[in-house]
Image (cartoon, rainbow, N blue to C red; front, side, top):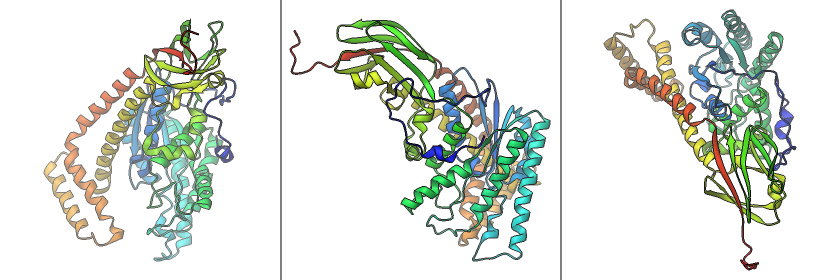
Length: 475
């Protein structure tokens, strides 16, 4: 299911689209099914990053009748071997029906590519690292298959060697990740497992943008971790390559005959011609994807709106002029008769009641992701720093972590020690480990709220012609 990177650079459609001017990929079966539990296995990019939260947000707004549970199973700093080791605890114990697998960034052993501290026998070690990655991905896939868990492979993201940063460029890391990606794509094809190929598309986007602007990066200053913009690009690639549908809904009404000409995922009723316009009710089976302000640069990099967020309303045979649109008595904008004849995309209109509602869902998804990330930090500290400690012995846990914090504080002047991160995670564990039950309860409450407020609703629409100030009201 490898994508064609050239489609990312196709000329975008106009925001106002005719009802027939869209092509939606056909798929025999949705990648997710009702009541799926999706465990997202990965490293820090899964652990802390919001790409899967954006995918959850898309499914929660587009498929309100399909209840899904997304469980963050990322661990910062982990590799495929560690992911294999924790399958039982993270995936099988959660009764996963689907698992996504994203590994590679740590498997290639980035330190082997240093030009300032060249390791001995680096080339042989590089080959062993990549071979180990391949072997462990196969083992994970075998284990998931044995348990009947459906799989989605996700290739590694890119390592930005070219962005100007104080972090050593480690040239060769990105090429190693490309080799890992090629292996994952081939394995998915062999095993008939869907593959989301992030590396090739992200690499092309990054390179093309840097040709025009050398300061651009799809990744962060550390060359590894994308920010919200990069994560929304990742979510777009996931949705696009798993054949997510384009349309929120589409509706075409003929104002003259007061008839529905075409409707998809919507049900228009009570169509009434008014002296100055048109009114009708519309039951809408889905909601638009919200505009995400902290990730909005992504919309310039990939055709998210054109490909995945079309809420197109077309009104034919209105009298020439401009019309104010009210939805649920809220004024959401003014449109010309010619634009309405072509069709307008309401998904990008942030004033609509639908968009106001989805911003609330987006906020809930963001909180859901933050809580999940905190819980994964607890698992990381247990796995990395509390081995052999009885976790029920709170005093022993506290003593071990306080000693660890003191050790890292002594190394705070060593950039390679990453002391700030380790100290933060240890302190977070001491503060939050007793709150895990409450966090899990809140996650459940968030999911319940999302699947309550995202349900289909009927909205009232009214188009009223804007009076020409040069025309008498009595004419």
